[in-house]
Length: 93
Image (cartoon, rainbow, N blue to C red):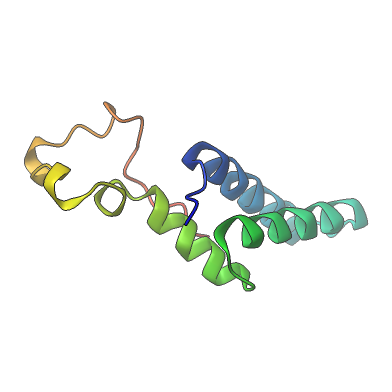
């Protein structure tokens, strides 16, 4: 199975969240089309047909505890989220 690039996934999630907010604040045809495109791309990238499943799969992919194999996991008190460029915040929207 091919694993999507975490940077691409993070970018799509960020764009998806921004477009959802923009569309909630003020509906615009252009924003709706772009949101539809980003939603489709996120679903294809994550191998799902539902955006909620795609966001959950993307969030799991970006979770450092899930991404590392068990032997590579470091105890929570020894983790440095900035070392891996991860903030530790959930990206699910």
